[in-house]
Image (tube, rainbow, N blue to C red; front, side, top):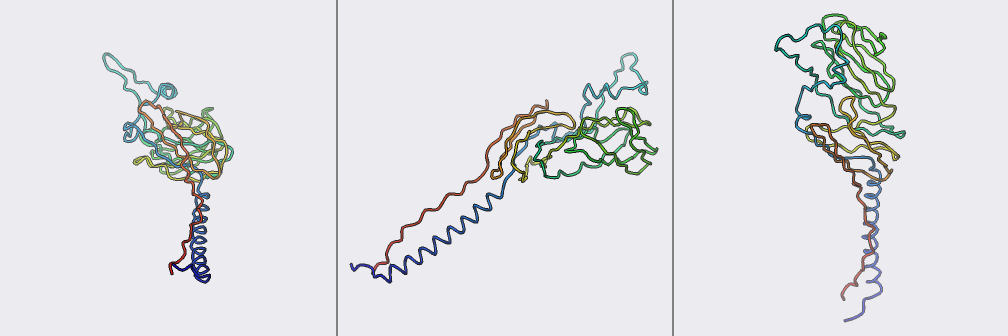
Length: 270
């Protein structure tokens, strides 16, 4: 067999270099695209009672807060005063930290209908306004826990209430037994997830130190520290039981792109 000619080797190496260069450029673009993906993704599994229920028993503390002199009916004989219920509160998956720069979607409009707030408790990612729609046939005066008037809402109209960070309880002068519990965080991100499938879609978030927290309405269920990097995607998987117990698992979901090796170019046969 004759040795390959110089022209043949040059031609073969030129083709090989083009192929290798193309592969490097392609993988480099993929690597750059991957590095741009950062934040969190995951899956939240809710107990059936949480996922499908529309009514939820009012907790002892909130039940006591709702008890006022206006509730004058008392059980007599063998009759029993039934426990109060309210619309099932939303489950919130929250990242709380100073680097939380993503704007969370505004809370849905709160309605006052059937002589109660629906929902009866909510969480805000940061201070701001909430919208309250009056579905009653009378004017309603919204007051805070100090009984200070915040706004008046005509029948069928929607009013705005501005809230500061902290915990607040709103009620109305006309319906004092209707209560809305609100927890307002200083600076946080509410991670959107599909209540039916449990899918928590990729949410880009700046790296930093956060607290991963789960809230049922205004009630804190679980909280733990979470360190995020600017070039990593963290996978959050959690189960939430009917007894409001949260079991979270956190993994690194980032895909590492391998560095390509230069292939050996075989000489063309003569």
